[in-house]
Image (tube, rainbow, N blue to C red):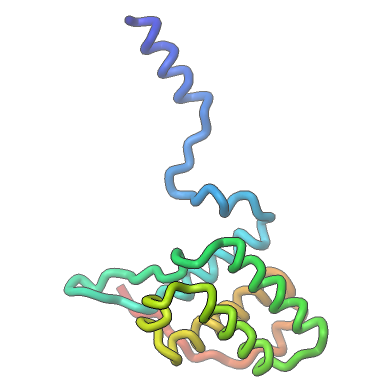
Length: 144
């Protein structure tokens, strides 16, 4: 019996344990991990229910699609596309990336705000040479 506990305890020290990290986030290079983290933080403006709980809608999007959104955003800036054209593309991608109930909850204004946040996060973390192309955004996250 003592030998069994020793083996279990030894395995606990050998096996990695990351309870707060989504398994698919860590497979990406650091700039993309930072992009996903910033995107999650800045997309957290909706509160709901009696306790004003966070509505983490970003978690309903596939991580690979979010990474592709960043790559497309930076590519479009490199191709000389305007912010408005890039934002329209991000909005179109968002409307197909998120489930219908999330889109309904966000509404047109919320999807537009998500597009602004996604573009800003992509530029800040993956193609910062285009930061001067970003408009001044006046979005404020709700206070806790």
